[in-house]
Image (cartoon, rainbow, N blue to C red; front, side, top):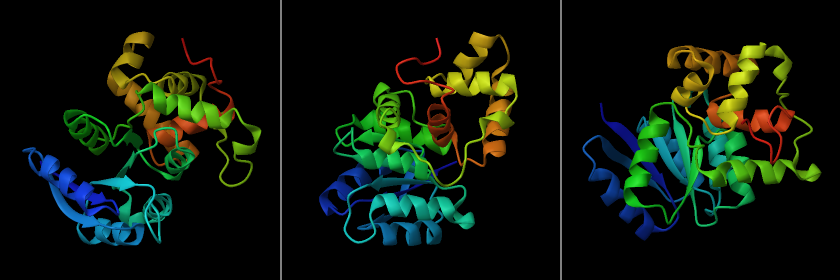
Length: 226
């Protein structure tokens, strides 16, 4: 099955470079290019994109707002957003994760790593293993002014003890297989618990689940699951 990729960046040269790279992979194809967030949302719907490579800083509707719109549109429920940024410690990346992005990469990423990242998020995983992602979440939640006090509550008390245990390990960056090995259960059981946790908390994907874990205090800054 071929993964359909949309490239959203205000620089035509960058879009062209990503297109050549993505189209060079047998299992990936570029279905459109957008120069701003408004175009990205429209093309994600019209071209039935699976993954959007989303730049944050674009004119007009930026990547953050576009990510929010995609996350709020039921018709785009299956679309995954992978944020690409020049600034890996950019507060907008953190906000994009909360808005529904499945992860982020710096634009200096190696070509094969980018292709692997597209495949990963297309498969329903979240690009959370890089230390920079967890550090980003932790650093912003460590600042009281950055912690969300309004909007949808995380309500981790809805989760069972086992679900909270698994969510904490996911937030620490472990894959389903690694969590399964740690807890001596099957990867399928881990996946089931993760999916149930997201459903109970009304979260879009694993990236938002990680944010919720830090935000609630289940995983504390500087003290990930060991």
